[in-house]
Image 1 (cartoon, rainbow over the protein chains, first blue to last red):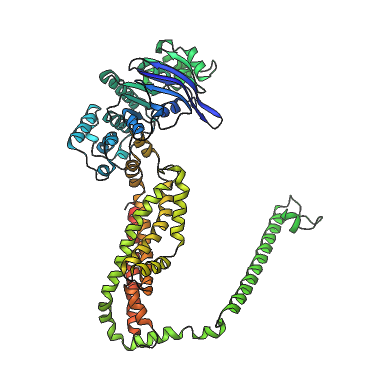
Image 2 (image 1 turned 60 degrees about the vertical axis):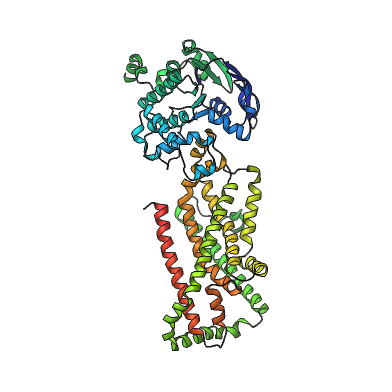
Length: 269
Length: 292
C-alpha cells in the first residue's frame, strides 16, 4: 500500500534524506530510529507534504502523493494525520475545538470563522476524547493541560481526521515515562483496533522494540537498517547511532523497567 | 586607530600596571570627545537656523514678538463671552459625533484591510510567499500618501462630506496598521499553524484559528492607539471640506468675526474627547496585553 522510491530532500548542499526506498504491503506499526539530524523528521514531513521533496516518489495506494497540489494536497493531508513532539495544538482554544480541527479540510473557511460545528461532529469529537480517557477535559483550554494530556488531545485530533495513515514525529520525546507509555499504548491500540498504518519516529530503542512490527534505522539520510524488532541488537543499534562500545541503551532509556539491576548497581557503586 | 589619532604622545603612555592612571586617562579622553561633538552639534544647529531664517519670508526675529497675539485675542474674546460656552458645547456636539464616527469607521475598515495585508506580507505565514515584497510596498505606499492628499482628491471626485474623509483615513490606517500587525504576527508561535497545516486546513483557516487568537490582544491595542490618531486626522480633514467638527472650527477661526468663543468651545471639546479616548484605550490596552 505504501511504496517509497528514491525519496530525496536536499537542504542547501546537504542531503537530509538521501534516496531512501522501502515498501509496506499492509498497515503496520513502523518505527523509525536514528540520531538527531538523520532525516527522520524530514521524511515524515515530506510524507505529510509539510516539506517538499527534492526528488523521488511516495506512492500511497498507487497514487504519488508528492505530485499533489492545492486542494488535492490538503485532501491528502487530511487522510495522513500528523502528531508532533510539541503537540502543536491551538493553546488558547478548548480541547474539544482542538479535536474538531481534525475535520477542517471538509469545512469552508466561512463556517470555520463562525465556529459552526454540527452536533454530530461535536458528539464524535467527545466520543474520541472519551475513548482516549480525557473526556472530562473537553471544555478546558488546551494550554491548561499537562504534556501527556495535550499529546492525547493531538491524537484525538488525528483520529477525528479518520486518517489512513498516522505519522508521529517523536510523540513521546517531551513526556515523562508514565505519560510516554500511555501515549505509546494509545497509538498501538489505534493501530490494533482500527487497522491504521502508524509510522512513528522514536528516539528510544526499547520503545521501538516494544511497540513496532517493523523498525527502520536511518543514519545521515540513508536507511541503514530495515527489519523486525528482534533483529535490532545492540550491535546494530551502535551502527545506526554511529556509537562506539561505550554505548549503553539503558543509560538513556525512559522505560521504567529498562533500568536493569546491573546497570543501576554500576551507577550506584 | 583612535588611539593612534588621539592617544597620548609616545613616551608619555601611562604605565599599564597603574590601573588608576590608565582609567583617569580614559575618562579624560572620553570627555574630550564628548566636548568636541557638543561644539560641532551647536555649530551645525546655529548655522542651520541662520540658513532657515534667511529663507523665511517674514523673518523669525520680527515675528516672534507677535506669537502670543492671536491666542491672547482668542482667549480674551472667549473670556468675555464665556457664558456662551456651555450652549456652544451642545451646539457642536453633533459635529463632534460626526468626527468620531468618521474616525471609528475608518479605523475599523483600515484595521481589517491592514490585518489581511499584514498576514499576506509576513514571512512564514504569507499565502503567496513570492508576493511578500509586493504587499509590503503596497503598505509603504498607503502609509506614504498623507490622508489630506487622498481626501482632497476624493472630495474633488465625490464632493464634500464624511465619506471621502473616511476612505482617506481608512487607506492610510490600513498601511500604518498593516506594518505594525505584521511585526506582531512575525513573533507569533508557529506550532499551532503547523498543526493546522498538517490536517489539511486552508490558509484562511490556519490564519483564523492559528494566528488571530494569538495576536488579537496586541492588534486591538494598536487599533485603539490608531483610533486616537484618527480622531485628530478626522478633525483636520474637516478643514478641507469633509464635515465634522473641523469644518466648524475653520468657519469660527476666521479672523475678526467675533466667534472666538466658538473656537475655544471646539478646542475644549476636542481636547476632552481625546483625553477620554486616550484614558479608555490605555485602560483597555493594559487589560488586553497584561491580561488583567
